[in-house]
Image (cartoon, rainbow, N blue to C red):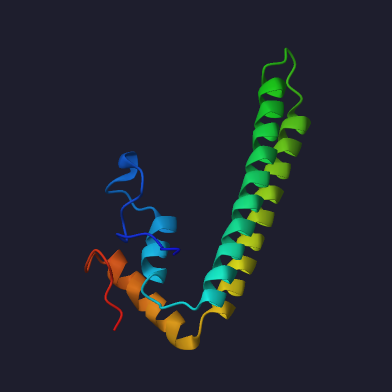
Length: 137
């Protein structure tokens, strides 16, 4: 059986203990919502889509930083090329944020109104440190 994460502000890896890791925290909060199988499948689909887009964006950004490194180590720096690389990075970042907003809205559509209210309140409780696993009764 699929189970979401535990503590709302502790990451899974030892290096992340005590640090806010919102992906893990969201799992802890979602675990309290009694999601149906269909909701779980849709949430997993949205997460995988997001991870795929993140990895594509990360790869693109690494390529830009490699180009930037080449440009700034030339004897004569082409400032227009450097600015073009910066514009490409800003555009990719904006594209990613738009994509993330689309997935957040799609996920909100998966939840019922009552589940969204519980999730919001649980997130507030977690943020305020009012328990390791938010009570959502």
